[in-house]
Image (tube, rainbow, N blue to C red; front, side):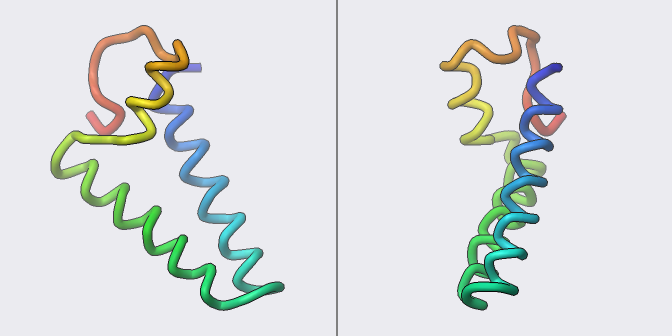
Length: 69
């Protein structure tokens, strides 16, 4: 699996998890959903993706390019 797919996987898991937590625990978890969405938006505009940096340091995705290309 390449780096971009890992990033999409993490984003999906974070969003779905926060929605479940907002439904069963506290609506304040929707702020986390908003944060993930905002991060996806800004990374599409700036090509800066914090998760990409973390995954690269862990050795994931040896291919060139950004997560949001």
